Image 1: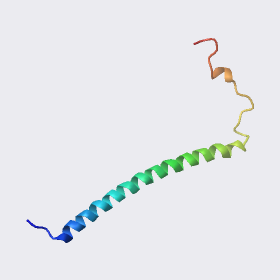
Image 2: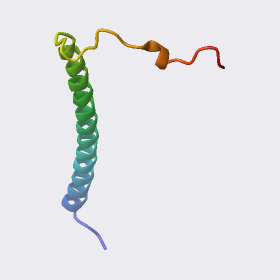
Image 3: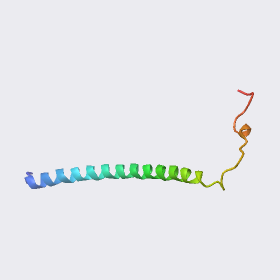
Image 4: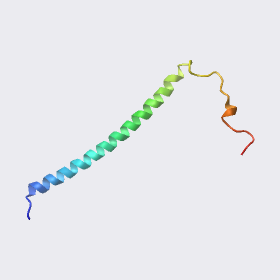
Length: 69
């Protein structure tokens, strides 16, 4: 049966808003990930000035194997 133009217009607007919300949620998720990375990087750089946690000597021989392939 025939539907009024108002109903069709409102359905189109509803679909448009749902797509916009999905895009905003995706953008919000990416923004939260970006914020987490910035906070982690900031933590690293803030600890550079705090020498209590930094070892004066690090044994790099344990990090890499020598003489083996």
